[in-house]
Image (tube, rainbow, N blue to C red; front, side):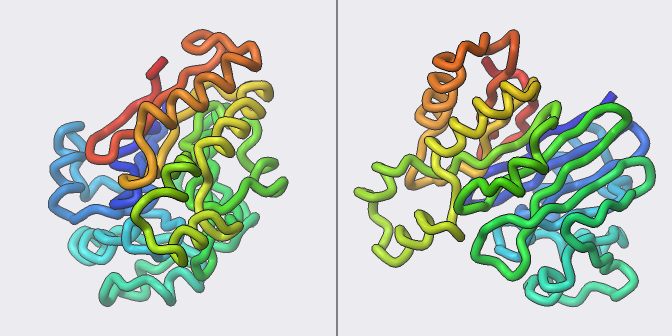
Length: 261
């Protein structure tokens, strides 16, 4: 049975766990090594049992703890060449740096993986789809818009973590300086609640059963606002939430599993 859940998610830190019972992977590690150890210990998973960390991009809320756990536990780090070059995580032994390329499938032990390019203001940002038996799970956050290419990659996912970063009106009238607002709203910024809701409808229509909204902004969003936007869109499209599809918002500070409403 596949385990796929968010350890933390938000503009202050991101980390996701997936396992098919044989292989254990992290997607990003945007929290301290100590906090990661505590979170995994609550699940009776030693950090040393993690087989690899896959990195989406080099921003600190995704890589904060990678250097520490790679060095201490000799955990391989998978990322594109440009992401490896741009991560500020201290020295990592070259033997632990595993280069990947978007759209080239690979395996880590028993889990099949495809990285796909995302439109974001980073060196070479990617999302990931994971194949465990007959199931597919995806992580797609940190993107300014949902391109046809990304949609093709995440369609068919049984479950996914989808960015729902900001409420557009909260962002426009919030405290951020104008250049930062412009960056977030750009095609290399972050996905809004409205865009996430439209994406969730399309995915539910294609058979996705579990949707988790993630990477919410602390300043420009609220879990209840993001949830309501997607709930209403799914409901208006005729989806029975809780039956046809589950809808969950990833918590900023603690482990979140699929279920929700």
